[in-house]
Length: 493
Image (cartoon, rainbow, N blue to C red; front, side):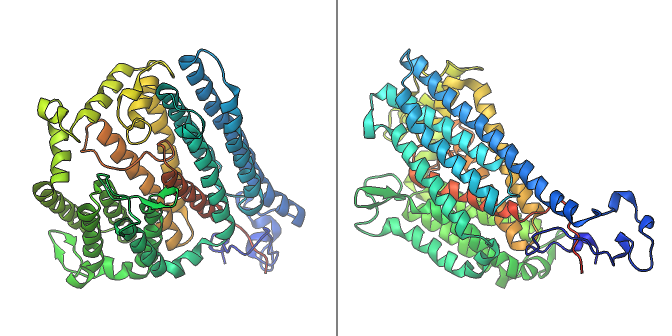
């Protein structure tokens, strides 16, 4: 068997089949093999080559973690110098716990996932740290301190999220096992979606019913639901993609699915519309439907699914904007933000306009950390953290943050497309697209490209639910990337 066909995960060392024609076995002299394809000549060299590449990856990751930690610390120091004129080491000491956890995470990866992608965790840490610095800057502007400061809470949530991600990495030693529980993941997703609607559990008085209160703690179950939905979609599409991609009539050169195969997309569309109607959550509805649409397209390769999906989405958007007052208000504020009626209305365009003014005040290079007035925008630490960063870091800073997101998503897509099995590929693309779509929807809403929604910027915005979910995605990507073998392995018989 050729080396490229033998990629089993159980082999722990790269060995040589001396009876193979490639290594000069029977029927061929040792000198007839080409130098480019010649395997190592002895067992010691094989083990050395096997261990050297993972060591390089982890060493690179350690270097990137040091750089990411330096960026985070520098951002906090600049905030203090800009807002206070002096350095307060207590915040840096509190933030050092995150660096300590990152180093523990790194050491665990050296043992249980030596070939994991070295860029994913440093990028997540850098984004997380920049978000903490901006939230801390808003705490200074609002006079919040102690446990009442959102920045301190964000540090605590980050530590908890990284610990949960580390546990997930240790528990999920073989990600393929998750495909066996796809229907359990589906049931879990449904339960998580319905929890905010349970009387006495869901939080009242908000525009969108997406939070639940358990004692002194509050949580957004839909953030975990997006991960379980990605697991279900990946497992389902692996088993059903032949029927979804091969069967069906051709119309205008495109093969459309049979009516009985339309059930999955119609079911997800109904679920998305239910979230929009009953929970008044436009962002989560868009995220769930967009996730399934992209995954079914990647799984089948049929453009007809995109056509059907966009038709259903546009139809649902038209109906919602016509009959649902909540959606009507979002569209009116989006189309006419500077109208006096919309600007002064409750839930109108005030937040959108002040965010745009913040971007304009920042210009190309920003006012400098601690030098602007991002606190004038409502929810500047969560929904509008992009506007806060745009004011003090400018267009250049926003481009740098988007470059980090782009690199993170591209590494996730690479993991998905180079994966060794269909379930891993689908899951890698799905969880990476979740991050990409959230960034697009959040930044698009803040910059008035699309109507505002209720999503938060991954790793940047204040909130523990989002942090936990996104760090679990990091753990999944690390586990998936560890299964990829860039170099073909030769196994002895």
